[in-house]
Image (cartoon, rainbow, N blue to C red; front, top):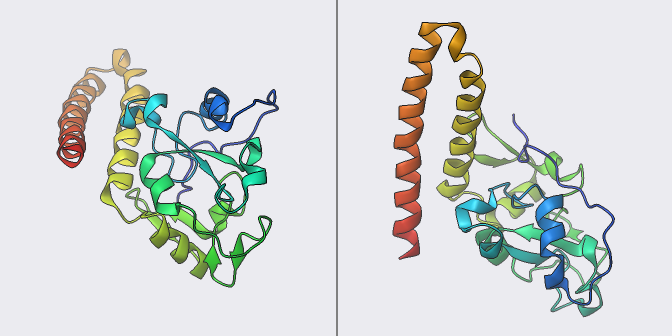
Length: 196
């Protein structure tokens, strides 16, 4: 099993801002320009401007946390809409009740409930993970497609480092690059079709 995050997001110390929207640059950096929940890179949504800020404990229920930096999650629109303002309790510190609720994506516990299979599909490991998976719409193929695209890109970069050492590797690199371009075009078409 593979972890959801290639690099686990973690909060840095930041200067307090007047409005949570002003934290977007800090969040983008702390979350490695990827969704805190599904790890999709922000460029898929048009970069930082296409990404959103989720309030882990919903601001509609806990307005006192609206500007708390460690309550903010850099999020793709799908995950932000999926989670919405669902919350299992009347207390901001109680994010799980029974098998319902959410685990903060910056904690080690997040990976205890969710992971990826070898094909990049997000899977649940626990009953709570099933709830999160369903609520956050992790079963959508776009999560897997985007992850696979990134894996192909990383492989191409790795292979490119060795192409000068062997003509066989250079041939393989060209094959991978052609496959990647074809796959990337399919991804772009799927995204374009869904946005129109």
